[in-house]
Amino acid sequence: MLDYSQIEKYDPSGMHKIYDQWPQIAKDAHNSDLESVDFKNINHIVFAGMGGSGAIGELFASILSKTNIHVSVVKGYLLPNTVDKNTLVVTTSVSGNTVETLTILDSAHKLDCNIIAFSSGGKMEKYCIKNQINYKKIESIHSPRTSFIKFIFSIINVLNSILQIDKNHIFKSLDELSKLQKYICSQNLSDSNPALTLANFISKIPLIYYPYGLQSSATRFKSSMQENAKSHTIIEDMVEACHNGIVAWEKPSIIQPILLRGYDDYIKTQERFEIIKEFFTKNNIEFKEINSVSGNILTKLITLNYLLDYASIYRAILSEIDPTPVSSINFVKSKI
Image (tube, rainbow, N blue to C red; front, side, top):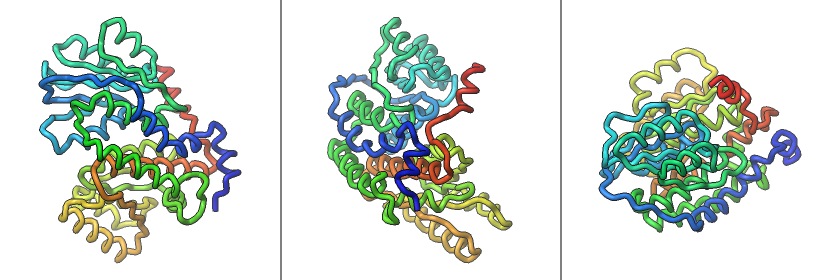
C-alpha cells in the first residue's frame, strides 16, 4: 500500500498537491473576472492545441457534439479548408510558445474568420497584442497538464455565448469535483480511493475501451499516463473494437483492458460492453471498469479526467517515477 512519504519522495515538485486543489482551482476560475467575448453567426468552431492544451479542445468538442455547431479539433500545423467568416478559431497554448498552435494562429489571422487565443503569456500573447487579436491571459499552474482545469472553466466563462453550457451543469460539475476529491486525494490512500485502486491494477500496458462521447477522457488519460507514468497506453472505441480489436485477444498479451463507461451510454453500446465483459471472463482476461457519474456531459468528462489524471500520478509514484519531468518532449522541442 502506498504511503504519503513515497508521494513526497517521488513527486518533489508537488504535482499531487495541485490535483488536491483542483476543485477549488475550478471554482476560482469560474468566478474569475475574465470578460466574456460574444461572437455572432458562428456555425463552425476550430479548437487548436497540442498536448495538455489540445485536450481542452477535445473536451469542448465532446460537449458541442450534440449541438448544431460543426467542430474541428486541430493537433498540428494546418487549418481545415472549411474555415470561413462564420468560423471561430480557438487557439490554446498554456505556455504560449507551442509552435504548431502559433502556426495555426498566424494562418487564421490571414483568413476572414473569427479568432480568440488563450495562453499564460509567451509568444502567443505578444502576437495577439501586435495584431489586435482577441486574447485572454490565464496564468498556468505547475505545468500545462495540471493547468487543464483552470483553463477549462476560464474558457467556459469567456465563450459562454458560444458554448451555451447550462449554469446548473457548471455548478453540478464543480460540486461533483469536490465530492470526488475526498475519495481520490493524497490524504486518502486507502482501498476506498478509486484512482489509487486503478493505479494498482495497471502493471503492464493499459488499453482503454471508451464509448461515444467519452473519447476526450480516454485520450486525456492516454496522454497523462504517457507523460506522468512514462507508460505506453492504448485507446480504442468500444463498438469499433468489436469489429477488429477483439481478435487480438486470441493470443496471450501484456495488455490490460480498462472499460471506460458512461452512466447512460446508448443502449446498444451498453450491450457491447456486457458482451466484451463476458468474453474477457470466459477467456480469463482480467479487466477493470471505470464508470462515470450521472448527469450532464461536462460533469461526466471533468470528473473522469480528474480521477484518471490522479490515477496516472499514483501509477508514476508506485513505479518510483517523478511524474513532472518530460525530458523527451524537451528533446524534440530543442530540435524544432
